[in-house]
Every structure is written in C-alpha cells, then in structure tokens.
Image (cartoon, rainbow, N blue to C red; front, side, top):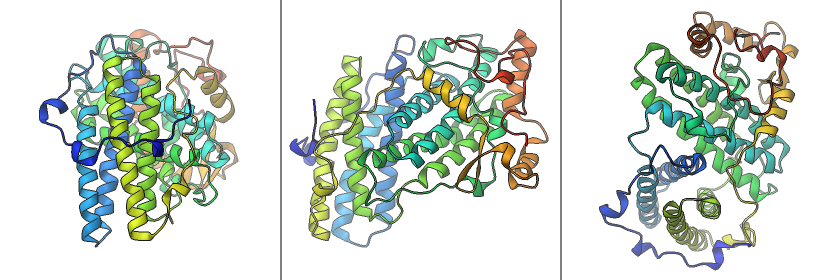
Length: 413
C-alpha cells in the first residue's frame, strides 16, 4: 500500500520526551534473534547517529537563535531514538560477533540499494564498495572461527555467503582515488537521494565502530585486522559522501534527512518479524513524521518555500534486507578487478606501472597485511579457510582454492 508521511500527523514534539525506563529497553536475545532483525537494528542505529551528528553540524553553521532552538528540540529526540535502538543490542554479543552483524548490514543493504538504484553512477559506487565489504565479512568470519571455534552461520544465518570478494589487500588506494562524482539535486530521482542518505550513515557507523572498538580486541592479529579494515571504511565514507550534491542548503538537507528516516522506519516496520521490535519501528516512524512536518514548517518560515514540492506523493520502493547471493556473485565475476583512478572506475591491469595505486600499495602492504595473515593462519590451523558457499564454487578461479592465499587478484598490473 502506498504511504505518504505528509498525510499523517505523527507524535507531537512535546510528547516525544520519554522517561528513562522507556529508553532502557530489553535487548534482543543473541542466540535466537533473526539475522535481519539484527541488521535492521544496526542500520537504524547508524541512521540515528547520523541524524544527531547532522543536527549538531547544522547548529554550528547557523547564527539564527530561533532556528537553533528548533534544532535543539529535534536533536534531543533523535538522541532518545538512538538510545532505544542501540540499547536493543545485548552485551552478550562480543565485539567480533557484532562486527559480523555490521558487515552483513554492509553486504545485504548495499546489494539491495544497488539493485534498486536508478542512477548509473551511484549504482556503480555501490557495486564497487559492495565487493569490499563482502570480503571484510570473510576476513572477520575466519578470525571468529579461529579464535572462538564457533560458526559464523549462527550469526548471519543462511542468508549471506561468506567467501572472498575483492581481496582487502587490493582495496588500499591513494586518498585521491576515493572521490566520486555527485548527483545533481535538481534532476536526481528521490530514490537516489535516499540511497545516498542511507549508505553514508551505514558506512560512517562502521568506520566509527572500528575506530572505537578495534583496540579492544585481545590478539595482535585481531587488532591489526580491525585497524586495516577500519581504514577501508574511511575510504568508503569518503567514496559515498562525495555522491551527494554539496550545493543543497542546510534546511533542504534537514528535510531529506527527516524524510529518509520516515522512509527507513516504514521499511523496517513493513518487514520486521519480531512483534516487540516492530512496535519500536512504528513509534519511531510517528516521531519522525512530526520531525518531517517541522522541517517543512522551517523552510516555509525562513525561506518562504513550499518544501512539499520536493517530495513524492508516496514512498518509493522500500528498503528490504534479504538474501542477495546471486547478485553478489554476478558483481564479483564482473568487477572483482576494478579499482579507482580519481573518479573513474578502471581495471587494475589498465593502470600504468607508475600509477599512485601501486606506490600506495607498496607503502602500506610491504611489511605484513593482517587481512592476508588471518587467512594464512586459519589455513595453517584448520587446513583450509572458512567459507559458506551455498551456491557453488567461487566465481573467480584463483579464489576457489581454500588451502592457499592468492594476493595478486585485483592488485597486479
């Protein structure tokens, strides 16, 4: 059924402040939570963190005291929502177990966005980073089985395969090659704008998570892996944030943030299988609807424009967490050897020998690479790497061997 948040009233702002008992929610049970309930929670925590950070940045870029008051109220309620969502994650999940959830978010969210994205440039940006997050899941899964003896399938279920993507060792590129072309706000499809506003917080959250917890891992190998992949997440945030039109006004950005939150909470509500958590999505949707109306009122008040003209008559195709095995295999087969040359996507074999990519690779990879080491140590201990390959052998021949590491795929000229 088509849904338009502009037709709804939502929860009035003055009723959005809740007592502590309402915020300190009972976490899900780690052993029996559905993998995609976990991914929705992780994803929406990232969205709420972005909302709070955006509102703080907006506050720092306006001198209008009346606008500052309005931003303060919305910012406080976004923080309340973030506390509820993030507090659904139990302490019984280790950092590494939660990391597997983070990477499953990155894989299946990115794959869904790519398959539904109308802008070819944005779709290519999603496909490109998808193969890298897919490889990160593989690296962390091998660390997990080696250090705990437990099965990553207990966390990701049978929904997401675990095998090499674009090898992490090949992902380290010069900072100048993390840039992308931005869409044009005047002509871009609303779905493109929402997709960018979704993937940036998702990757930003992962980057921040690894920045804060990577040093908490007990082994030097694990600490090194979090550090290495954390640097790739920095690249991904740079890569994705360049996609948004930087000329859009702060109030228009606020409008799109609030609309996207409504869109995502509605998507979660429509697909959630846990009744208790579905009620949280419903409540937060009603809160965000009021935030959206507030943004519309601010644009009318301070800029004299009707912001509803920027929004469609109903939500576009919703975001769905689902298995994307066939699509991911297709992208691996077609794009595993892609790299970047400035804003362009090129085959690594097309780069000149003196390209900065190879110079950067030599600087960071010549004295040990944790993402390679973790697979080599897993093979040494268990005679092969860990994989979940439900759809057959790996689509790339050199990456089919489970008893040795080929670190030239996607990085040799």
